[in-house]
Image 1 (cartoon, rainbow over the protein chains, first blue to last red):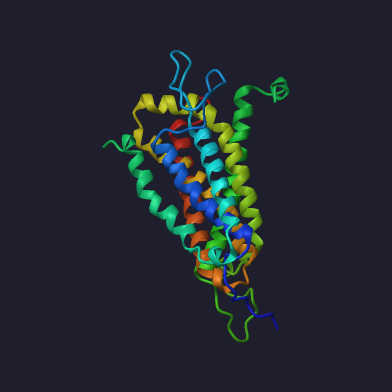
Image 2: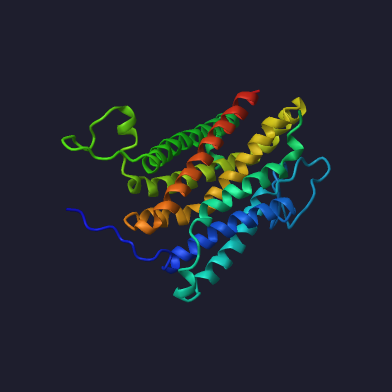
Length: 122
Length: 172
């Protein structure tokens, strides 16, 4: 006979709270960084050059890449927010709605689609 | 990594890396699809039948979801790291020729892949947490739908990557 399933209240553990807030904040911050052009650094793959913050492509040196910088910024921000959330008292941590872990990415999909409107040429 | 180039050409090196990325993606796709099928339509045990009995579909969705969680996280991270490594070369040697050909929708589809897989990466710690507490019934809904969302992202990423590969091809 298998042991009964746990039904105790959810995201009570500090790691669970950190992981939930990190995931949600990371997704939102990533979209904000993308749409507002806020990379932590800019990578120029043609010359392996790295500039802090946003830097436009340099003449005759190929394109500039911001994706790595968006990830770094989002991870830093989400790590801080997740860490702060994990420090909250258990009574508050238990109130975090877990459904946000999948609702937020689904809700961000049309925003991302819109952010790429440059590419949807018919 | 330069010592590798003493033995193989630059093209071969990046091709191998791309193939590794693709194989990791296939493994991830399989694991997540099994897991998503298991949470969406778990077969009910019937009296007088063994657990693994049933047709292909029943067996496909009869997997133990928790057993896949760590593998999914590891595969996602590895595929992401290798993909992120290739991405710098893609930006110069793949994207620019596709831009010159005017295949903007293909590029847009690939950009969306890049965004979605990144968001998926950030959700992995909570996904892992939910599956490590698979016996907690209070997590069932979040675990189910997060798994389905990640499986959807994985399928989209796989197909978008495949399309870009078809458009650009190898060694052009």
